Length: 88
Image (cartoon, rainbow, N blue to C red):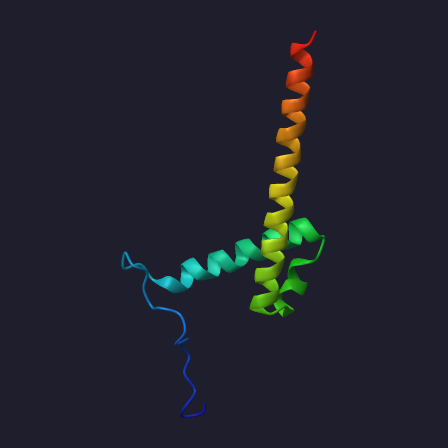
């Protein structure tokens, strides 16, 4: 082992604001992000272990944007159908 190698990540806090260990919480967030990306992009979960954090962030942003666009289109269609139903 190298004398200057640290096994801890100095970029992440050790504890959350409420005093819980940060590592397990962050790990669960990463797994959830990979699951969401894999589910919505038909990409194997294992392939997502090779993408950078910024790529993961972009993919999550794109998925969220698409979800919001679909939600808006669904609400508009529902509203349109509801108004058409009032005409009968």
